[in-house]
Length: 333
Ligand code: ZN
Image 1 (cartoon, protein in one colour):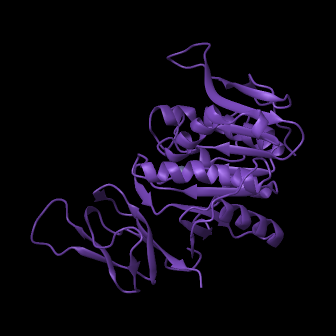
Image 2 (cartoon, rainbow, N blue to C red; image 1 turned 90 degrees about the vertical axis):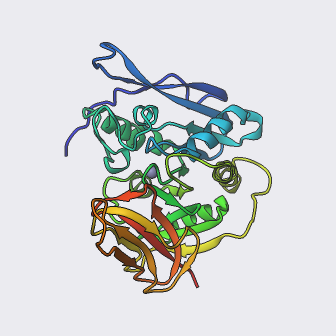
């Protein structure tokens, strides 16, 4: 077995001392703009005695904003007296990507949510992954990682839990997802789960919840409110905060069946025919894709393979072959 080196990241905050501590995860990174510099990833630890630990993160992808907004607010507002146990808050998990409003890191081109378990002697993004894998995840009982669609996708707002081999763990994750109380709750099977933070947290036996709360490279007042309330609901569910979680209606949906994902097989101009949250029947047209370089040619019509509601859509007006055009989710009976 390969012996891993120590991770070069050091925390400027204590994880085991009561109180509220704002600081940084300091990642040494020698680069053109800073010879002996470090990347300073903000972190807040709010700790009050024994109890469970929640690990909350946003901007695993740097162009997704609901998590960072909710977590900046929580880091500012949360006081130790309100907490039983510990809350670790990292609003900008992939800080270099966040600062450039990019999905992947500008330093190495690596997608943080596809490079777990990372490597302590790898690229900057791999080092961040390794720090979460071997230092932060072992501290946590419940893990909430915020996502949205970024610049290229837009979603109906949902919290998600995955299908897992361990049925008890899956039930605990589903209960935490329901506690988040987004307008939609999704049982999810990833297209490709290798290297995901989600998978790392689940393999470590943690109660894990992720979200997709919007997209298009921005947040809305509604999606930001859902994020903040959801974070507090999960902390209440975990026994870390007192009070009552909201119990608004949440529509249960899943995308585990075949045919939910619709990819473009041509390149061009999208004419949407269905909006997010609307119902479709199998065979209904979701969109037309018109040629971007000529008139007089019929569009390609993308029909839904399944019945359900439009849960995700390509956000930019232009699409390329192989891009995800639409995800149609099935309501859970
Ligand atoms: Zn994401």
